[in-house]
Amino acid sequence: MKPTQTVAVIGSSWGDEGKGKLVDFLSKTADIVVRFQGGNNAGHTVVINNKKHSFHLLPSGVLQNKTVVISNGVVIDPEVLFTELDHIQSEGYKPELIVSSTAHIIFPFHNYIDELEEKHKDYHAAGTTKRGIGPSYSDKAARYGIRVFDLVHPEFFKAKWDNLIDIKKKMIIALGGNWCYNAEEIFNQYVEFGRKLKPYMRDTAYFLNESLDDGKLILFEGAQGALLGLDHGMYPFGTSSTTWAGGIPAGAGISPKRIDKIIGIIKAYTSRVGGGPLPTELKDETGNYIREHGHEYGTTTGRPRRVGWIDLVNLKYTCMLNRYDALAISLLDVLGGLLKIKLCVKYIRNGQELDKWPIHSEIINECTPKYIEMPGWKNLHEEEWSEIAVQGFISLPEEMRNYIKFIEDYLGVPIAFISIGPNRKDSIVRYPIW
Ligand code: GDP
Ligand code: IMO
Ligand code: MG
Image 1 (tube, rainbow, N blue to C red):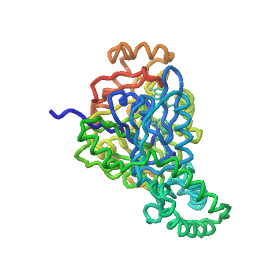
Image 2 (cartoon, rainbow, N blue to C red):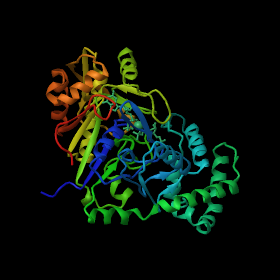
Image 3 (cartoon, rainbow, N blue to C red):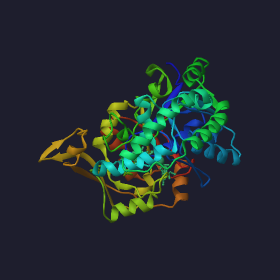
Image 4 (cartoon, rainbow, N blue to C red):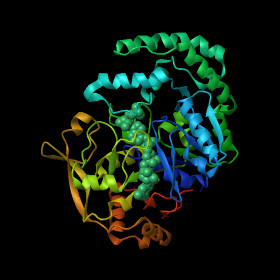
């Protein structure tokens, strides 16, 4: 059998599934770690010996000192990139960073347009992170966006800049905002970013394909989650990139044939930041317990996350899309202390049972979950979970093992990685991934 050369980590639901922790773990074996979509709307957390690291743009593999790549499918806010890079270097990490020449740039007015558009959309607002992600991708699709290559070549940048500014000015005013930018100042500031980006800039499709030809191991780090994706997520309550594994070929310039393993990460329950229907949402004491116990507050915006029971109907859908080789499950420790745990196995709409995720938010709004109940497990201290992690799967509470087995059977995908605490070491590997 061909050895595994590439592994992808994909969030299976609404983001914040624990991708940062899993990517950090898998990066140990990889040579190269790639972010291929999204931007600094992401907030990926890695905890090592109780020290928390949050990444918005840099791939989480930086903590393993790997080569990290920001490929063409990402939208880059250079200010965020250099702040993050300076910070990680000040902590003694020395990652080799490579940035795609064709990745698009986020400018300050993109953040403002994001805000104005959200206001304008009213009920249909996704509750964005206001990081300018959607507006930057819009410019890319409209073909007047600015790319890393342009910043590095001010003469090409200038030729596109005046047109972009003209359009953005009109747009901001049409959306009820005020044009409060000095275009020349921004231009000069971004030329300076271009100067700083130059040593990192590469044609990353060539770099990644040639690295694979040389036998290197590559890990793809998904951002957001499959249900937030542009085509197959809950439109319009999601983000503006392709968040399922289908985003890798386009976002990194890799043939789909070169993706060897796709790992989906699921949470032991559901969480969501932003608008749109959430069928299993808990607005009661149990919801508060899970939110506080799991510290469910956004890594990027600090917003309290909406939480609910695990939704196997939508997870089955994202398992179908991604055709995962294996799953990782995180935050199981957070449910400790609940007497009963519910799992949504079907939806009910107009008295009829549905097995399939209904795709459209309007229909999902009319669905109520049908649950089965399983006995919960005890609440333990973080150190106790860490000790259990060392002993392996068989040492997990029996109720937790049954919960894991039920999910595995329902979804028809083996659960290879189990996370029972935020720290790097609070992990159980049931089946090797690389
Ligand atoms: P990501 O965006 O998918 O990388 O996830 P986030 O970092 O936004 O959110 C996951 C949060 O859960 C972070 O604060 C992690 O440190 C934490 N976390 C990850 N796995 C576990 C786990 O198994 N148990 C607990 N208690 N926390 C975890
Ligand atoms: P990670 O990678 C959770 C959500 C926002 C909003 C919608 C659109 O940490 O899992 P955007 O700013 O992208 O235009 O917002 O998507 N969202 C996330 N939710 N985790 C994320 O990233 C998210 N990135 C965007 O809350 O509903
Ligand atoms: Mg996150």
